[in-house]
Image (cartoon, rainbow, N blue to C red; front, top):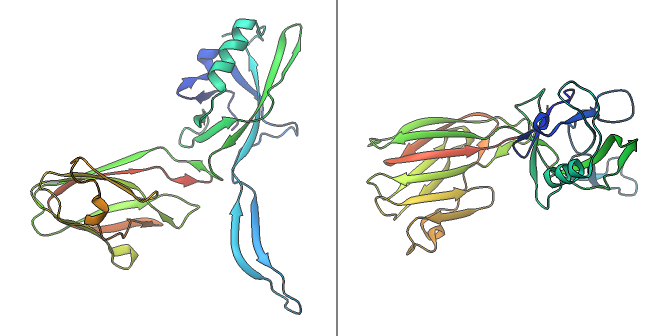
Length: 262
């Protein structure tokens, strides 16, 4: 995060005359990377190696100093109007997207958390804001893959890539529109033949699947429990390219946003 420019909640910092002055006080530029890790283990008497139960990772946090400047790079005064405008832009009760302009392929979902004090001399100066992320990692851009398998009378192999470098298994969001058949099967050949199957559907039904949160919705109001038409094997992608064999005439949209450390 070496750039002075950033994008917050879809708004460019240059449009608000606000720029990154410094990330910390060490003289180095700090880039949020991975949240701190708490190792869960139990020490046993007379046993050299403790029992290891896994890890808990804390959500990322980072502090940024912002300065107001005009288009010529000269410091601006923090007028009451500017203070109101910047606060309305940066302070929210839900996570918003933060992107540094030197790495547009990485975004953080953040909430401003700490006391944000203005440090001013003659109404010129900076504000320091601490952001807390919604995960221990940053996020990739959103990728949407679409496959038109309307003429898939036998089977077709599609490829989906898990581009995360921090989790071994990723669960994408799916939307499947039936195109004449009443069942569809997705078999991940890269995951030991793990089978995701929907059955007893209507020939034009549209099913939306949130694999991570294990939610399925149908566009048919009468189908209030589409889980009854599902084998409950949620689609997971192992690291790298996954070969998925699809049986059934349908259209498929896959939406992915990968946790990353870079």
